[in-house]
Length: 508
Image (cartoon, rainbow, N blue to C red; front, side):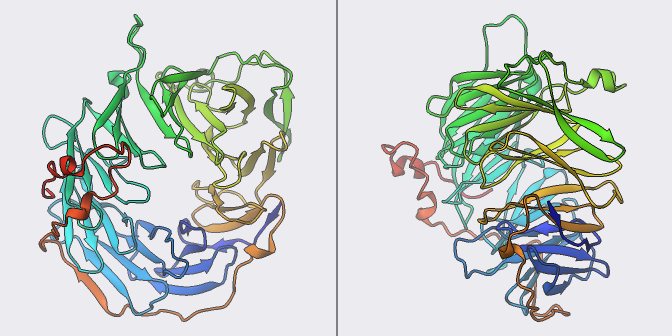
């Protein structure tokens, strides 16, 4: 395992979607843009004011397309283009009558910025080409209430203008409403497109029981999943909802220590993954437990079945401990899934989706914070744990079987330590870790020469020229183009475009 030198920063670094660039905040209100794997900036941007978050424009299909970056403040959002040093944009919050800016990010392209105001009062889509904006009001919540359809870019949006939840489908660019549907939910918690863009899953509040509504891409209800309605005991509903990368399975993590797997062909349960309090596996399915073998030394050893992992009931004084499956994630090949049961917060369960059986169990020394599969290498898992005095990196590789743990070469500075995969086509994986004051590259199985980056320095941008000022209050753009619905009708090939267009209405 190799580590780079520490890169000083004033806030956590931010990777671009394609992991080609990394934005490193520096003191003095500037951002250094580096090629991933390098610490030498290819551009420095003077941002003028401190911001709350840094976001990159989405990955483009064109390798020659330039990238943009934005920094969000409470009263304005500013954006810059990496290639065009003379271009910049600024969007102000006007009078702030609808609250401060809660979040901002690029839309489906680098030419759109989405701004959500405090309290979820409205979502504003700004065009960086025309300077016009479209407002979509009464958003359902601050998270999981909208998503872009893969490939076509249609926006699915959850709102609650009155006493019911509404699903609206918006056309790309114009954001005209092409479909409105009243959902059969009492308090919808979010929506997610399937990776192939054929389905939209909406789930209800867990306190109301299991209620998942499956809609087609054109906004028609296909089928609800209401769980086991025949039982005598009322069960709390969905805590986590995840699509497999191949869109073949929808995984539902509930409060009952169970993951339900629905087949996307019928959306009926095909298997349940139950998390028992006492783990009893065969000899070919190991239980790995992290052990302290010295003051700063960790290793994994196999423990025999049956085994009872530590629970939150024994380690916490909380009178109402968390319970339920809070983490579910599927690997790049859609063959392995890892889960975490909050009642056993140090335990990661790894399941084989071909046999629906446990493959192995990993028991950590500290509670698990995040579970992350490598974005392109199947079966390579990163385990991020809660704060410890000295940070460690935990990895499990399905081809090797035995997990590994290694100490990081620095201590915590402010308790914000995090680590993430760097997506790359190179055979040797790499990671980026940061703690808010420094960043570092990690190569778990040695450094790949291709990841060293190009240290050629480009021009330095010390000024903000050609500022584009977009003030709140300008009229919305409404193209009225009948092509808005194109691409929505591939769920069922027999649907008529005329039927879909008859439900179109102007953007609220």
